[in-house]
Length: 349
Image 1 (cartoon, rainbow, N blue to C red):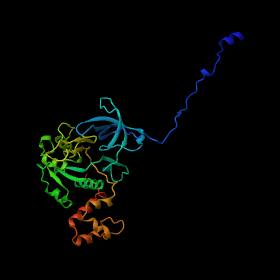
Image 2: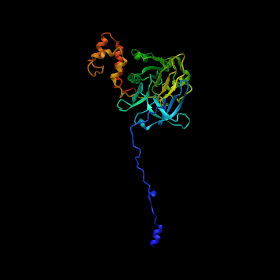
Image 3: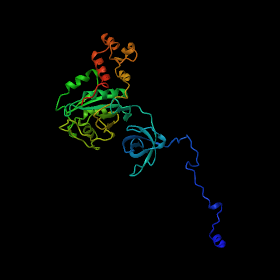
Image 4: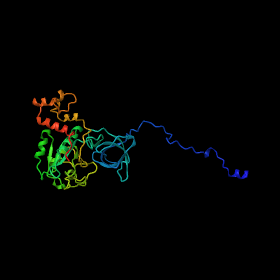
């Protein structure tokens, strides 16, 4: 029996011993991150389920799109449409190829909104834009001045220039709406278009867009995406119509998309258009209302004698004396106070 057991016994030596590796790995962690000096620069055009479509310029005449993902080393830093980013990895742009975004460059401007005025979480709509085109139908659906005011506040807060684009002038004239914004000096374009791509008179609009990055915002059904389709005919997006029962439009654009505009005449550059989903509210919880005064250079000097933390709409506000002394148009102060109050007042249903 002893001999039988000994024949079944296996003798082990050090070569038979396997050591389970540590779960943490043997390589020490370091805070030093690669510099990615070979990274190429791209512009984020759109975002879809964690994949970023970026335009990479090879030189002044050639460019191509690549799909990329955000690397872990960026941490919680978000990547938004309009960002200038550094990209490494597979830059071929072939189907199935995936590059990596390793760095987000400093932003020149950031257009934000919150879901409502009580929402503490701001959402970045687009980065590095120059101009905010507020698209509003004069009828079908009815214009919402409160929403326009809120968009103006967001534009001023972001350091962007506003542009009013009034559509469907064949249904109603623009005079009464423009009267509200005359004192603000906001540039505007009036067009008869809104329901079909071939209805637009595009030359006046193009003159405002050339050489700039313009974000188009507006509530659903005003013709915003139809206008962008007309401006960039080779990149069509779905459009919708106004519900005859509710008077509201149907959301057809679900994500922001940046498109290069065709060159217009001899203007500098061709410009970019950013089409955004239709909005039914524009929360301003993120806005520091004290910055809005910077968009009123004729009124801002008059705030020097205002009491501390003045809301510019209270009995002791020095702006009343400033206007009474003839330093600014009273209509300008009325417009400023209307914009400042827009965050405290509910938007039109």
